[in-house]
Image 1 (cartoon, rainbow, N blue to C red):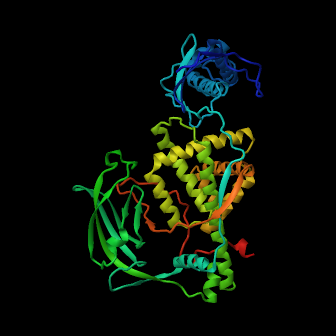
Image 2: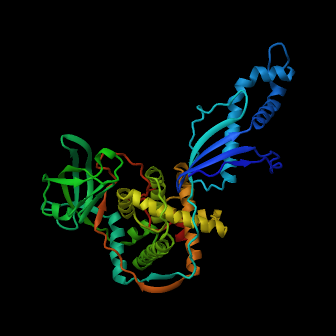
Image 3: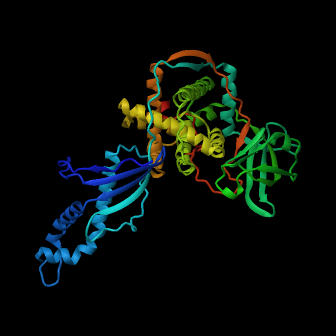
Length: 496
């Protein structure tokens, strides 16, 4: 349904001394998050922009027969008008799109989509152009004060610290070859060839995994993986069928069952390092095993905070999005899916989770991209409105704190982590994470809590960053340095 045509009259000079454009704007609403906008720019505004362009050009224009900047104004305008057209058109488009979006109260979530070359700047009369833009849907803010929420609580036992420490020490362990059959808890090295009929889709070569019930890929899982390979010996092959996710990047393979030939090339068991004084010093300058256990307990508590916040967030968003029945276009969800994936990975990294856990979560999100992105976007729209209403924003110190947490987990300097995030364009994802956490803090400050026991989920999945269908993903996990002499459980600043 189209809104009535709106005429936006020029106003007095803005802060930069530039008057507003006299625009006619027509807005169509194909869906809750889409706007199709038709803008008409008055002839007077076009001529004003040409005048401003020639005011800048005239003092330095070079015209044969005249010294630079001394040619008559009309001659300069006649000679250079065609050359100045693209500059004027670009300025008019940028200013009119910005003004139309502000005056029509858009909360854009994408850049305007229009064909610059197809837009004509007429010799006479107004200029008309159209663009599509994705926007935050319009909605009434749901009641968020006084929510009744459950909060998970837990005190870690010495046994749980020991179990987690064993997992951390596995990073420093070394593999010992086994001559017998594979058993639960062993590590096996695989070659896997995935085929659709006779066509090879992709292959995994010399990849070592721990034997667990589920082997996860970015677009499918092998369930019962442990039962499949336990008892296997080097040289054994297993032929199985595996279903590709309904949301795989390759549309022609979505939901299709393909074959996998799994070859076992090595069977090994992991031997943990002895916690000698030299080893304790190398991995983090720990004076004794007790100090190391304290560091491990701290990491567990940081991960508990993540689980607490995640559970609270799920309860909050279940209430706030109950009536959020907006239609979100699938194309928009696919484009926004990567941003949600980046945000989730950053949050897991800053909460102290290891790469294997992050990779499992990453694969799970990719296999259910549309549903998880739709849920995340609806949450984000509501959190963003609350942030605007309460003037909540990310401060420089917030970025510093988040980057420091990521740096500690990956044992790199904050400077390198920041440079990587900026290079990958992920600072905006970090900003969203910070703001959403602050909004949740605001909501929880007005909520009523009931403490419940925390029950950790058993990790029964091993993940490979690989697409069965052959699509190559860019790795969202910041590079962590594990193994050898490169990894430490705490940074030099923590060691003092």
